[in-house]
Length: 417
Figure 1 (cartoon, rainbow, N blue to C red):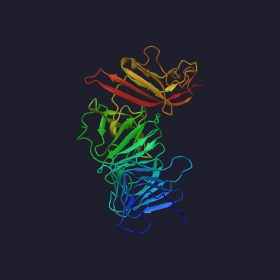
Figure 2: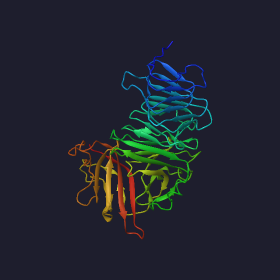
Figure 3: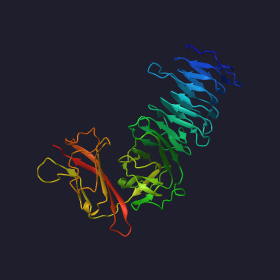
Figure 4: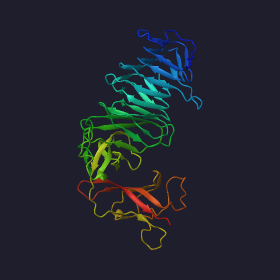
C-alpha cells in the first residue's frame, strides 16, 4: 500500500474519501511525496499563503484554483509529479498565480469543453490530451509548454481551444484546435533557448479581417475556411513553420488540389497590408506544408495556391560541378538573372543552415560555386559536401505593366568530388 506524506500546514479538509460537499483548502505547505497518491473529490483551493509541491500523483476530480505556489521538485531524481484532471462534470482551472506542473492528464467525458481554463498552467513534461477540450479562448487563461514540454494522444476530442505558448529551443507541435477540431501547427527548433512562440487556430474565414483580394500577384487562391496565428514573444531565433490540412473537415479541396507543388503557406503582412508568399513544400502523406526556409515575419498564416508567373528569360540550372574541369556547371547558373538586378539568392543545406547569400547575383563574381559564405561555423575555404541543397531566388520584375516581386525555390545538386 502506498504511503501518503504531507506536512500539515494547511487549513481546511483533505479529501481522500467521499466527502462530496466539502472543499480542500491549503493555507500552508503541502507536499505530495514520490510514490504517493493524493486525491480531492471536491474543489481544491490553494490560497495566497499556500505552497503545494506535487512530486507524486495528484487526482483532481472537481475545480482547481491556485492563488499561491503550485510546483514540483525539479531535477533528475524527481521523475514523478503527475497531475490528473479527471472530473465527471465541467472543471474550472483558475487562479491568480501560475501553476507549474510536470506531467498532466486531461480526462473528462462531460459536455465539451470539459475544462474551463481561466488561470495559468505550464507543462514541463508531457500533457496527455485523452478526453476533454481545454478552453482558454473564452475564459482568458494561458497554457504554456516549457523546454522539454510535449503532448500525446491529442485529437478532435481533446486539445486546446485557444492560444498555446511554447518556451525554449526545441521543436514543437501545437495542440490547438477550434470548434471541436484539432488542427495543429508545428515549428522547428529555435536556436535561442530564450525563444517564446504563441500559436492559435481559427476555423473561420480570414477574408473579412484580412482581405484575400489584397495579395501578391502570384497568389492565386487563399484558404477561406481556416487560418492560424503564430507570434514571436521572445528570443532572436526564427523558425520553419508547418501547417496541416484536413480535406474532409476544414480545408477546401481546391486549395490542396494537384499539383501539390503549388500549395504554399501565405502570411498577412501588416506593413504591406497584403498576403505574401512564404513558400512551402507539401507532404501529401502527412497532409502538411512546411516553409522551405525560416519565415520572414509573424502574425496570420494559412494555406494557398501559388501560380507560376511567367518570366521566360529566367531559367535555373540546378547542377553544380565545380571540380570536373569540363567548363560545364562550374557554378549555380541562372540564365538572364542580370536582367533583374534587384535580386537575392540564398542557398541552404539539408539542415536549414544558410551557406550562401548575395544580392544582385552573378554581377561581380558573386556566384555559388560550392563554397560557403554563410555562418562562420562553416569553413568558407573548403568546398561544401556533395549533396542536395535548397535555393531561394527572389527578384523584382519591372518590365511589365504591373511590377511585382517573384520568389522561386527549389533544389540544386552539388557534386564536390
